[in-house]
Length: 234
Image 1 (tube, rainbow, N blue to C red):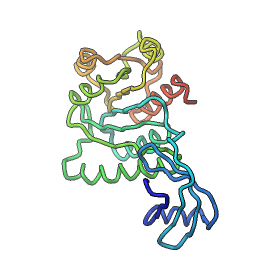
Image 2: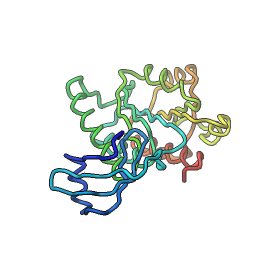
Image 3: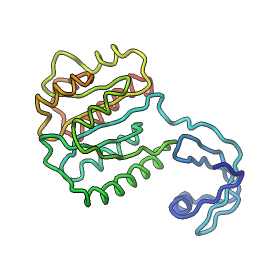
Image 4: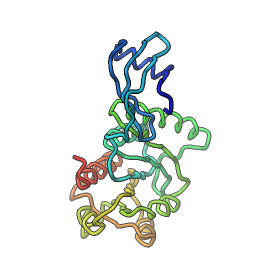
């Protein structure tokens, strides 16, 4: 987005047609990497939209905390729901992994196709919600790889239904100031005690999300929402 004129085609032009943009109108265009431009529509053709850049600025819709959401592969299309809603709430990356009790274990070929679809879901949700960044959707090969990466955040948290002495509020309060966070949740069958202990040894805070047992697609969205509230985003 370095030029003073932008030409949009393909899906972007199609979206402009849905919005019924006309010459002379102003619109905000995001580059998907954190910058947005205030633009004036010069012409709106069927296959092409011509815009003049009036101002450039850092996207105002991005949260101050960079959050990676780690979740074990769920069954069916539950991950698609999580990707869509987590993008709207403010996750910056969504990372799926296989754990001991995962029922769903996509093979390499199906994963390639799924990743393309998952990334498109993130792109669509980012567009709809006015995000300045399109979250990256990734896959890690194992639980151990997930906790090793998650532990690098300033606030690394694993949620475990059998934990009752340490809350998410406690973890946020202990971390005090943080600009990066990792939130990790398990599959339908939960995490094993061995996995939880491995996460603890890797440096993750093991927390409860309350007295109720949450579904595997509910827990990550609940945790992400709570973090955004704690970070002052709501």
